[in-house]
Image (tube, rainbow, N blue to C red; front, top):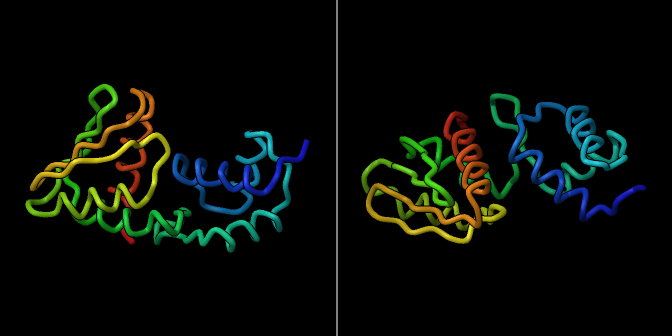
Length: 145
């Protein structure tokens, strides 16, 4: 069964945020695993339509995550999970900007964030959501725009 474009693009968002996708072929293969039958040409159109970009490391990132990626890679010192919470330690004075970037990215299952001077508390819907958010933050922290 062929699924609609909107569903496929939501799947692409999840895949790109949670896996290191380097090629369109990798994305086609991951979509097939998720139950989407599509060609590389379709994925190429989706990439253009969604504004996906490649980081210098060669992995795709969502356009809306570029600002978050820049903020996280430049200002975040550590990311830890505690139940359904994510604690992000930043350089002094940068936590409000990092929190705003987290909120603007509209990550799945992130309910919101609270920022101090050098710490951001991100509230997620579940422990599993917190782990996925930590993984995303750590992936972005290790990459450079």
